[in-house]
Every structure is written in C-alpha cells, then in structure tokens.
Image 1 (cartoon, rainbow over the protein chains, first blue to last red):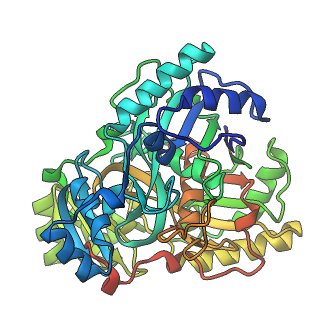
Image 2: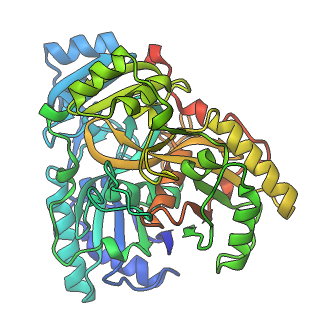
Length: 253
Length: 253
C-alpha cells in the first residue's frame, strides 16, 4: 500500500464567511493534485476553519478578570490572551513553566485551550478552535459533496504538544467520514496471536502524515491524503470526539 | 510537496542475528518501491529490530518477584510478563485499569515498558524494546549505506498510547539521519508573526505516516517514506532520545 499526502497550492487567505469547500475543490482541481475522489481524505488545519467561522477574537475587546491577571503575571503572558484561554477552558490542569494546559469545552487537553496568536488574521487577534470541530468537518464534507459529486472524508487538525515528549504533532480535532480509531483488539496477528492492545488512532495518524507534507508558513493549510481509502466511510461516523479519553479512565490529569 | 509512504512487501520473518539491512535493501529493490536513495526515510517497526538483536524473553525463564506478583494480581496480568516489564522499567508511574505505565530505562513513558506479546516469535515469548534504539538506527543506516551506496535516514518505531486520547499512534523510539524536531520557534509565519510554540515532532510524524501505509498483521514492518528529504541529514544527529522531555520539565508524571 502506498499512502500519499499532497499539500494544496493556491488556497487563498480565508476570511469570515468564506466558502472553504469551494476554495478547496478549486485548489485541488487546478493544482497537480487533481479532482477530489470519494476515497480521499481532505485534511484541513483548523485555523482556516476557525477563520471562516469567525472564531477569532481581538485582544482589544477582552477585559481580563482577576484569575487571568494572576495567571498571566505568573506565566509571563498577556492577560487578555489568558482570559481568552480561560473562556475556552472547562478546567485548567497545569499552569507552570510558562505553559497553561487546560481541558477545552470539547474535552481536548492541550496548551492554551488551542487559543493561538500565530497565523492570526491581524495583530492582536487570536484564533480559537471551532466551537464543534466534528460538526465543522461534517458541514465541509457535505459542501464538498454538493460541489464535486464525490464524498471525501474530512479531518480538521491542530498541533498539540504531548505529555512526556518534546515537540508537537498534528492530531485530529474533528472528522467526518473517517473511522477515527481502528480496532484490532480481539483480532489476531499474522501467526494467530491476539492483538490485545492494538487500537490505532487513524485520524491522528492522518493528521500527522498531512502535516509532514507542508511547512509551517501557514500557506498550505489543506492536504489531500490518498491511499487511506480503507478508512473512509460513507457515514460521517462518531467524529474526533470519540478519541477523547473520558476523565474517569484517564490516569494523567 | 507530496509525501509518500510505501510498505515493503517481501520482508521475511526475522530471527536473531539476521541481516536486516540486506533484507530491507533487497525488499525495496524487488518490490515496486525501487532502490533506496539518500533522501528516503526507512521506517522500521522495532519488533524486527528487537528480534534481530535477540531482544526477546521466554516467559518460562522468568521467575516473578513479590512486586510483580502483587501488581499482576491487581491488574489481572501474567506475573512473568509483569516481571519482564519491571526489568525494563526505571520507574512505574501508574498501575490501574489493567494498565502498567512506566518509564523505560531509555526514558520513554509507555504502557508495559514496551514489552509486548503480540507478533512475538513464539508463544509465551515477549519482545522487548531494543536496548539503545538510536544506536540500532545508526547501525542499520551504516549497513544500508555499505550495501547500497546511498544513505537513507532510519526511524525505528513503536505504537504508544497517549495521555488524554484513546488509541495508539506510532512514534519514533530511535532514529539516525533525521532531525527529530524541527524548530520554528523564533521564525516567522507567512505574514511575519513569530511562530512561538512551533516545534514539530518530525520523527514521530514520520512514524505515524508510515503506520498508515500498512495493516497491523505484522507482515509489513518496513515502510519507505519519500518526499521528506528536507528532514534527512548527512549526520546521524541526536536521535530520538532528543525528543524525551526531561522529568524536571514534565508536568504529567
């Protein structure tokens, strides 16, 4: 099997209300990548989804509260940015080493609740995660189908740091039409032994593969992954929220 | 940029002392993948490295101690397997929900210290992680260069679970000739803003991309990744150990 990931050239800067599906379909067919098919996975950096959905905030409009001010002083951050992080957080897990790790309202554990100033549309503006990234993925998939007559899967990504390891890897925060986890538990390996713990985070691996095909200058937010058609489903499926480990099962909070 | 990951057909079962480099070079040139080049990344599931290095243990030879017996009873595991895990662990971080999370002697945080019965060469045998996976990667790279006259990078992988998220993703436990982390911190994005937190776990993303190109039946342990040549270095570099977050900076132990 060969998997390929191709970053699309020609996706323009995105503004609130922009029609992402049309921009993606056009970029795919005018680039060397070729028209979308129903076995493709369209991997989209969340920032353009967030921008299209107007999920940005101007720091000038934010008045930090007491907790944000206290945390900002302790961590050496802009208190308005910290307030934006708190507004996106269900719970703050850690605040140390200049880092704020929280649980977002979606249930993701990540730095700064995904609130980011890099690649923001304007200075002093932060980009938030989409309010419901699985719903965003489903809408984008439906719009792509309407436009192109094909039904590729959609994965929406962000770069998350990891416990215990340096650096960030892209993971799926939303998806539609892809089985996010491939369960081999109870199945057998090549010589008939049970594969006990094998439960593959397919959507996260798709996100990681896509990230490798582009640089971080922010101009190639859309990647078409081919050769992963066996993971693409006709139904939209459970979305990336199925990958969130429930708090009760989580040993590292 | 297009990245591709192709799982090699025709890598035979591996036994202690086998010449992995020769098997990989042969499989690459006899399969549709074609001969290796110096911009390729050869991604190898650690199990075949461990087998070639004789890093397996027969459970019949293991006498569990008191701690292994106690943990095994509590977690519902084979006490000899738990003893093997303890022997590979510097520290046990969590033992709950039937799972043992430990810090290996290398410093990796993972389930069962990487000790695994799936895909083992014989029943009642467990496969351990290589003793020094970066050294294994360097040796394999040198052997590939000697055989083929080209100098691909080598990444050795395992499937690790993650805090907070279900499922496993493949990550790099050893590497040679690839910059494991790409540091964009201090560089600027497309419109000139500093990319503050961008430090990309390239070696882990390579491992994840490779994993997607094969199924888990254990017969395609070697994947050739192309299109990632900008991450390949002439020097072997710091290895995957550079990705381990030091305990003092780790917020989640």
